[in-house]
Length: 392
Image (cartoon, rainbow, N blue to C red; front, top):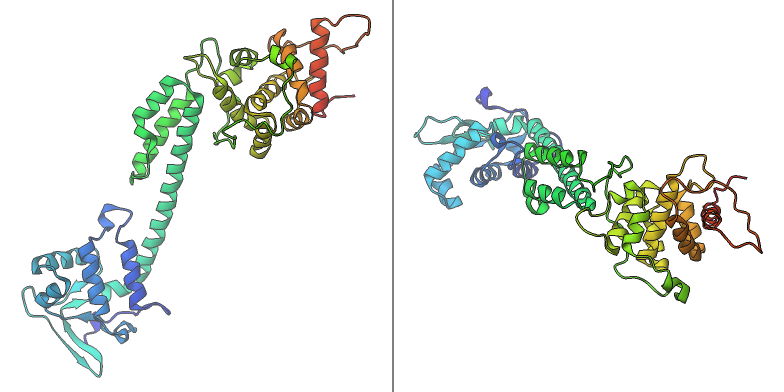
């Protein structure tokens, strides 16, 4: 027996069939030089399955000496294609050719064991099992990293669209047309796309006079917002409610600067813009998606959005202000219990710029008419009590 062709055997539990499956899995490779053509894989599997199970035991010789014409005919390829596939497998370290070029391939068995081989030896394939296994693990890690990169790029695209800045969205579309990344197989290209999209968000276009928000969420999520308003759980609007109807423009004028940075800068905002901005503002004030969805279901999308707008505005009052909304979650729960408080709060906000709300205790008098200032104080006090945050 030729000692130079003897191999160390496959690990326990590994068969020639599982080895063939492993080769098929790593054929794609994570790098160009590691890839195997479909023809090379077919040829290698043909040689693997043409051997006996005993040939894979430690210390044995494993290989084939079938003539090229016979192999090519069985695989329905030309002899030239077969030789090219064998050359590819040899360069990849899967086989070695032990015969003289253009010479007839020969081999001999004795008691079922190969004792001489002048043909195709599978020793490199068998001894390199650990290498092929490590390559598969590296490919799986690479694929997980690619999937993570694709996900990050998709989320960046969502965040850019959520800004509703036309110039920003147009630039993102130029960088990545239609936002599709599923067909990009280069990690370097994905990294470059991610860096360019991140750069767009560093200095986003804001409306004139606005400042960049330091409260933007790191990840824009798709809000669980009902498509249509639900009226089954809402109280019928009264005549007073209709007379004091709030427009999207008025709502935007009462919002904080950070909130307004989420609204379109090239047109007047509509109710869909207010709803989308409030869905994003939920993350700023620790309002969960289920809580936001419940508010949309019970109050309607527009009124739920106004609740978040008012909560966001009052959360930005000075820390020692008695009417500061310290818990967005509790404030929203309070408004769900007493939705009639929303309109007075909006009326109160009309008369006071952001951050300059009255800071004195409201003392009602039966005989005296309410002033605008005392009315605003009463409304903001109601919001603070609803949130459970009023200081004794």
